[in-house]
Image 1: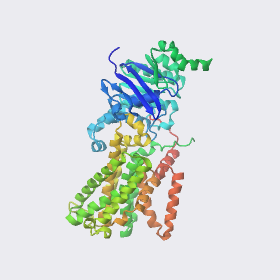
Image 2: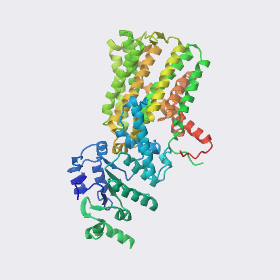
Image 3: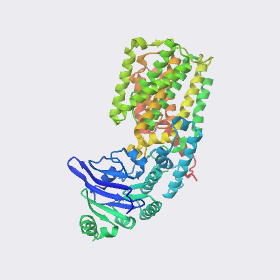
Image 4: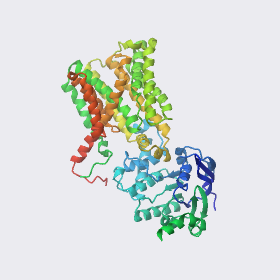
Length: 259
Length: 328
């Protein structure tokens, strides 16, 4: 394995007496698609909140590209190159669809208030470049032509794709998707899977939290399985499928439910 | 036709709306005359500046500060003191008022970063009252409750704006510039960041927006507007006293935004103009005016959730033949 881009070491998070995460470690390589799976309440979302700086872990550390990032503020982590989406969407309803994506470019745009408001050439060129890039991202997630509409005109699944485009606008090196398939049709989910593959081919790492096993198994290079806040397995989708602990904790239940 | 979306359509973003809104102000001198009418018009324009700045904080960034009138007072007193004690020219007073008030606004913003929602509102309410009490008690600087009189009307590079119509045109120019600035700001990365914070603070943070910095910026910009409005007030009314900058004015300012339409550029323009003219026009109703005022605020929150400006935008969007609103 090449040097890890993300190195998660012994992360622990406690909410009162409850251990939401307990000594969880894993690594993500460049251009790798990593699945983070587990039953409800297993700590997947908590982990994502630690990685994106929303929570500060009680134990352990997170290194991104060789630098510790745990404890940094979320905006600094985003600027360093970790982008994310939310399970419960955080769309900016008062902005147009294009403007939502443009907010992802905010931290890269230079120029103070006065040069921007007075439309000085530098600020104007930066704005135009950001708009072009944002429009191209909308096309990439399949929302081309909807730039000026309000987000309320999008379906639930399309709003997820809008959040993906907005996260991509920050130009992340690792994109973290929290339950990206919830609310998506089969067609939309396949489209998203293709997009994730394309991004990984382009060198981006992706961490996917997902319940939809069909989606995860066919998409990811490696998986980390959490249960009650602990890592119970790690490996390729094939290895995970054959892991007795995982079958008992997670897949077993599903199989049972299906059969 | 389907129910309109909960957010006002971007219909009002066209610069033509700004131009259309300017027309009645350009035409007003044709119908008004006399110092009394001009006095009301002057005040309306000053409140357009104040409310436009307040809207950047309240409407764009979503932070409810009830201390904004104190910033208005600081601007007015800065200008009044510099002019009457040191004989500074108008333009210097105006710039100083903007700078001093901007600095105060930034100072208020820093504690505001740690608290949110109702607590922020209460804190700013308290800070506003403290500033008003300080103004009343610093007799040596502010002449206490007797106020400062004898402030002269503006003169810019030797050009006097002493007569009511001349002053009207000067105030209109500054108000229009203030609205245009806010319009440009709204469409910039800063305006987007402010609204992102309003709509989802966590969403804004994880895409790299420094929310603390943007909140301070929003406070500072709206404070600069308040400082300019305060300076204009001092040089227009030629008298300032602490009683004027009361809690009642805070409520009126809030109503200007809510009735006009918060978060929309024309909202505070419509709200400030209406709520300045209405009490004068309804003077015969005496105290009953306040009952009507309360009812209007109550009804507008029920039936005009995005204010008069938002409803106007929707009405126009609805009257227009149903264009498939896609940019092709």
